[in-house]
Length: 142
Image 1 (cartoon, rainbow, N blue to C red):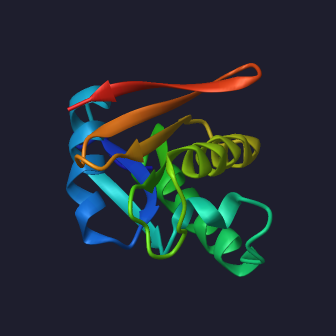
Image 2 (image 1 turned 30 degrees about the vertical axis):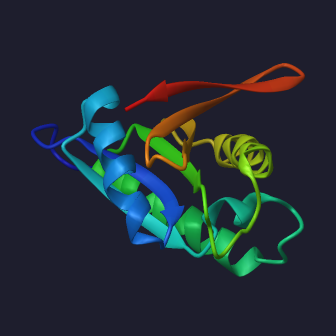
């Protein structure tokens, strides 16, 4: 495990470069991390949708997260989706559903880390996707 002098977080994110800085900034500002291990795939939230047929990518994501948590000591894992995604086209609700499912799947892996869902909107601001029983809600972070 990494020394506690440098605190890591983990983000499962799209390859789209427009999303990298907002997600890293959110994790640094809201979770006190100094560095973010990035696990990227086109349309990353779709990997967890159950309909994508991307089991190999799902296993790669789990392995990468394992290294981040076990070797770097990451205690926060974010799964992100975003507006205008070429790898997982769809509107905000579409992404919210995929992100909520991703949070459930990643949580089921049993890592000793908090798992959060994040959505980067059309203004490149991060919204926290919160599953609340039967529906979804968000909170904005600029």
